[in-house]
Length: 113
Image (cartoon, rainbow, N blue to C red; front, side, top):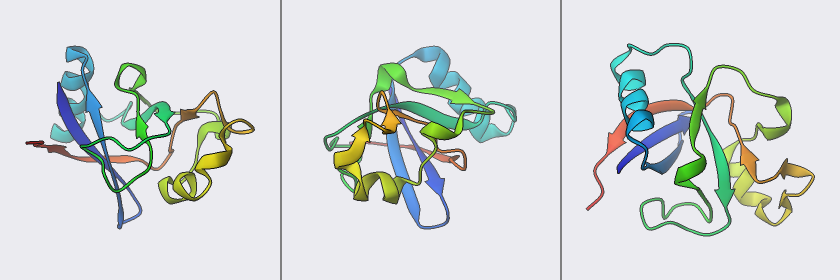
């Protein structure tokens, strides 16, 4: 397992856990600059805090995380907006709990102790 962080804007960071070796390798290729197409993060949110991502009241379910180049608009949202409207998520807002922030930028691998 490995942890990574992505940013939206310059002040919003979100940490997520990857458990799949292929996806961990993909994330590392994004960070190295080798992967330049599927660089945005997507997955299904869980409405509870994760110990590795304590700033937010939700996290991405590791088994659902993937990377994309283009996605549909209905799953795009700012992480602060998701936090502020978490009670509405998984219904008309972020149907199926699927979140795909279009402007997500993977910025670093995170060491979690």
